[in-house]
Amino acid sequence: MNKRYRWAGTLLAGFLAMAVMAGCGSNSTNGTGTNNAGTKPPAAEQKGDESSTDKLQKVRYNAFTGVSGLAVRFGAEKGFFEEEGLDVEFITTTNPVPGLSSGDIDVADFSTTSAIVAAGKGAPIKIVSSLFRTKGAFYLLANPEINSVEDLKGKKVGGAVFGSGLDAYAQVILKEHGLSKDDVTYVANGVFDAAYASFSSGQVDATIIHEPFVSVAEKAGTGKLLAKGWDYLPNFHTGVIVANSSFIDAHPDIVEKLLRVYFKSQAYAKEHLDEYKTFFVANAKIDADVVDTMFEREDVLWDNNPDVDLTALQETQQTQLDLGFQEKIYDVDSILDLRFIPKQ
Image 1 (cartoon, rainbow, N blue to C red):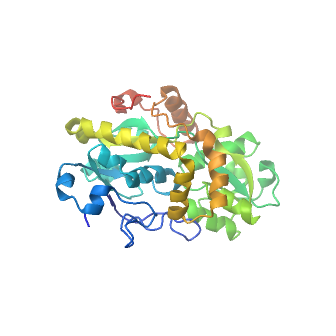
Image 2 (image 1 turned 90 degrees about the vertical axis):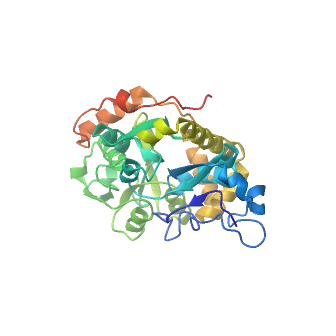
Image 3 (image 1 turned 135 degrees about the vertical axis):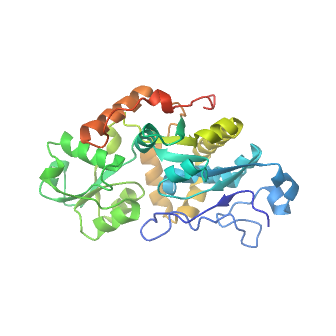
């Protein structure tokens, strides 16, 4: 059967030893005319319409894995890419810069700080849009017996990956409560399931982490939410979409179409939340009640605003500089190309 889009690679982080999504290649059918997520492939795909596929424009897209990337994959399942005339190949890699630089990746979701630093140092990429949310959906999760951030003094705290946005949030949260990383045993414990494994096994007493791990721990009674990152760094910009500069020059129409699909997918998911939750639960393999808690908690962050706030980029860089994560403040005007942002 012809595939209009492909999910390449494997997911980088599972949820609690489960895959973040139940196999990236979930557009294969199960013999009932539906795919593994329980949704029907587009009609033309069911019929094996080869001729229409030939007319689609190819784009290789490194979308985020995990909860941040599911809505756009939901849009792919709904046929939104095809409606825009795109044949999307989802690529999975931890660092899209080499692929973007070589031309093996055309467009990618990326952390804002990494995109700025990479482009500032000469990588041939441009920021073309913000992601559906730009505030850090990061949480400080602690053992139930720890009642406050101040109680972490002398404890073991996971700071994710040193120099990352998660690390920045963790250090700022500690600072706002009169602590520094020197007042705790501060360790790099990874992200997603690696961070949660270190927490649940007792290697750390608290960790900076993403959802759904906070909701999972709360439900199990094994963790307590101490702080939400965006309360401490409300203007720290965390997510952008970047594109290869040569690809922009050669295919500006594809960049515009992809952004349109991205935000259409996000808007549809939010406006049809019950349908999206069904897709989410099927792919993330998380209990529905945990997903409900997670969605409710993060609804405030789900802006679906593609605009890039230049003031936020400046403040983000300043925070990075203050923490020693950046050598200097980069000129973002030279690395922005916002011509393709969808009209609101």
